Length: 124
Image 1 (cartoon, rainbow, N blue to C red):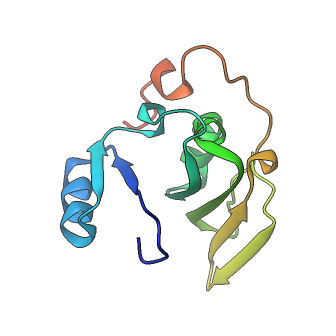
Image 2: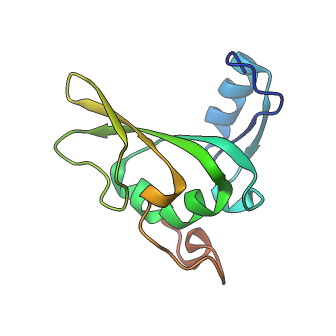
Image 3: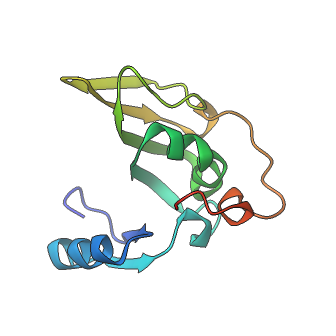
């Protein structure tokens, strides 16, 4: 929003996190995961979550981002980065990393069928 986005849609699987984000930003936010967001709808996708979970939801992130869009991934340390992404840019602060990627920087994943997040309860 601070960068001029007209629409911001946010999600988190934890109710406390969604309430905090809603209070801080005033943006639309729902309890759920990226599998609840329409395909090819995001110019920018920001995911601040562990490398393991990023790899598990790579297909959903690729599905959500528009062609030519950007993805900012953070929440992981340099010793254990995501495996399914090839960053165009890497930023570091101490041991923590932040990657900038584009849709084609994500390993090819089938877009048809049930989203990976529905296949198993990876968030528990």
